[in-house]
Length: 392
Image (tube, rainbow, N blue to C red; front, side, top):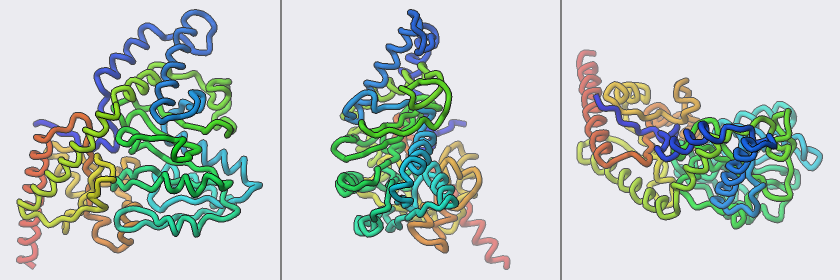
């Protein structure tokens, strides 16, 4: 049986070019980048070149504004926890949204137990906040605003530029989690007045376990991990040069032209699914929006009357990898806090929705096969449900 991967918002397969780059690094530039001998300096050269690549990709002012971390979870925790520690004398208020990733939500929930006040901005049925709500929440004690660039479950694209404009003359620092948007949108941290940005390589066909934290020049956070003086004393621990080089290689593969082409291709996949399911008489609705400014690779569907768990398991048995929501909670069958925020606790969508997410290696034929398999599964389950009703 052929297996088709449609869970690219959870993680992506590594590109062959990335694997080749990492293999070369492991074989040839294996030195410790902190060492002063030849092998160490060769590794340090790769580190510097990779940092430059990442800095240029997001239009950072300086290469040193990029800190390499283990991933966006560490980056988000670093900013949230260290900002709270460093700036609490200025205020103890933080603003976020009701649909952030758990690597933002969980540290904020902890800070609430420590006396911090957190405002969770509501979202509409498209997964978007209101700028009026944001401005109303902002006050003289706000020290941090943490709002994701693009949502990992429904693909909503937050008004990051407008938020940055509002905050540029305010004391609050601005963190955006760009993990899902990083491989799809053109990012300019200077134009958008972003203070901190997080991202992970494994969402863009790079390796797992490596990410970045952008820290705007002039801002300083104490190292979240104590130890050596790597990353200019901002993140202790020997740098993982093969993965850093792999991250940089993955970024070089994502040219602006490729990003635009992929967005168009992904939009076509969404239309293909919608048209196919409608033609087959499947009763469904899209969670969120099909607007062009949403993230193209994330697609969330409400399949009416059939539970997420049943859909996910049957699709898996048929050879299709999809998700019931965030990869961090899908295995726990925890209701999606994103869909709850969008539609309410009692909406049937909460327990009857699936996420399909596309990637570089997804094909139109994959989508045709998915539509056919989902149609067959839904029709079989509905027929069984009907028989059970008739026997009652």
